[in-house]
Image: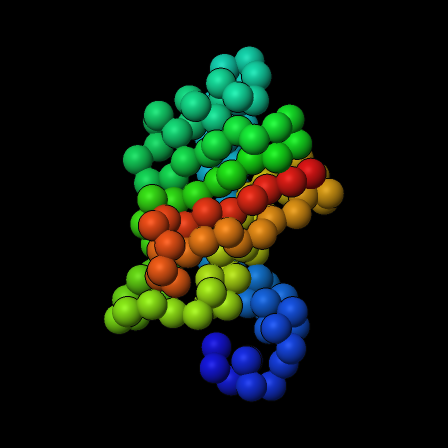
Amino acid sequence: CHALEAQFSVDEAASIRQACRCGDGKSMAKEISGCISKAGNLPDGCKLFSEKNKYAFLEYISERELIFGYHACVCSCIKRAEGDVPALWCECSVGYVSSMFKQIYGDSVSVHLLGSAKSGADRCTFRIQW
């Protein structure tokens, strides 16, 4: 990531990292969709997902906005690093979460990293809007 930071703008480097995600999030998208469907509405679906899932959570903000996150870093590359890392290193997770929620809500989804457990936050959190 240091090479990315040196050679590209912040936005370009973030875009490159987002494309380097590990997987497409298909199984997690299916799990989230199942919880929302079973609950019958988005707020209760978020609660159900959070209750069933030990390492991830969903917080309802509005009918077109959620907070998705992990209680701790789940990235196999980043969590091995000692100490904190720049938030840019976590942009691959933005790509993963974006892919996951686009499977549920379509291409209008936007995802923003709010905090990273490896960048000093209590947990990894992402704002999802569509």
